[in-house]
Length: 175
Image (tube, rainbow, N blue to C red; front, side, top):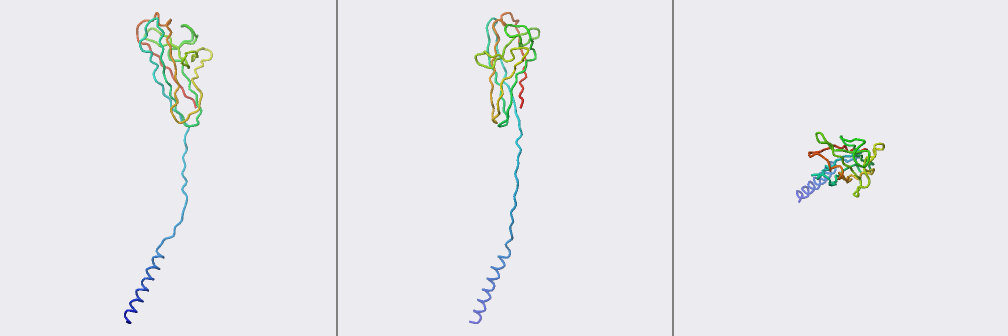
């Protein structure tokens, strides 16, 4: 029995030692903070679909549309302006003094652009004001479309020479 008692005592002491050493092996912990930051830049992109009139029949009015698409950072105010076109003139044609024109190699074909579907409000109608403003608005982080309406008046097509006519109009976004 003496052996059993000593054996039990040794096991008990050994168990206490193991428990005590396990507690002392545990490491201390501390916490800290990590700062996370980001800076969202003010930015805008712009694109425009072609204003394609297709085949024009002399003496017939031809109409079409184009879309200008802007995408600006949410909350960013911006304006869209339509340029005059590379072939513009300030006199001639029927209607307004200020005229956009498509050109072939030797001839020109006037056209008019409007901001409304009824084609009542011409864009860039006067040489003095050059009011080419399409819109002033605030970005929402998504594509925002502005429709532009084009017209070639019948009187302009009546005496045109056959050929391919083209113009390039710059669309500007300011923010």
